[in-house]
Image: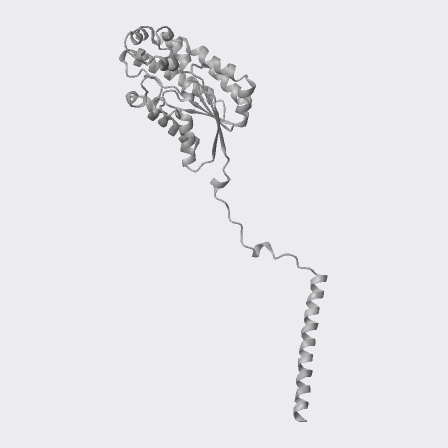
Length: 289
């Protein structure tokens, strides 16, 4: 009898506790419906990890314009400064895409101005955000009368490397004077300014890197002074032009080759060798950082 009594008391107690739990749970459910709390406050969530700056970096879309140096003439690997610069940027962890190399042997500022009017060239430039330009060597040295001596700048030199010495070189020495070189500069520098303006108008958002000139005849006593003078005047004029454009940079090359021509020029004694192009590529990468 007593056992039955305690059993009923135990069952009653369990029922009371269950009823209380049900009432409390029901109360919380009603509260959530009447006054919903929403999501967990943002302050209590883990903060988003900020991606490294390099991860969000813009992909560099590169186009090269200009003469045989842009094309890479003289480099046995065929890479020139363009592919070498792109490879260097990739090794640095950059995101780079070479859209095209439009370098043409023998191109002058006049020739490049004409190229910039072509629809295909304009389209390619518009797709880029980084433009490498090498132009002016043919203007400068052809203007000296060297074209009659068989050394008409970088492109004819490539076709006749044997003329870098001997009779062709002797004729060039006679014709290459400060006066003959400097006489060609005013009009050529005007054309340089015009074509850089053309590039800016075709793609005002792109960054333009113009390669300054070097003197490939700096190791020939009779040609060292006039060559240095002409190249210096040209580079100074280019700097004045480029300073008018916030998106343009002059990449100097004169100091890279000065007193190092034997090491950094190819066998034609005009175009850079592979090592010379690598030095230019390194300088371009440095300018981009």
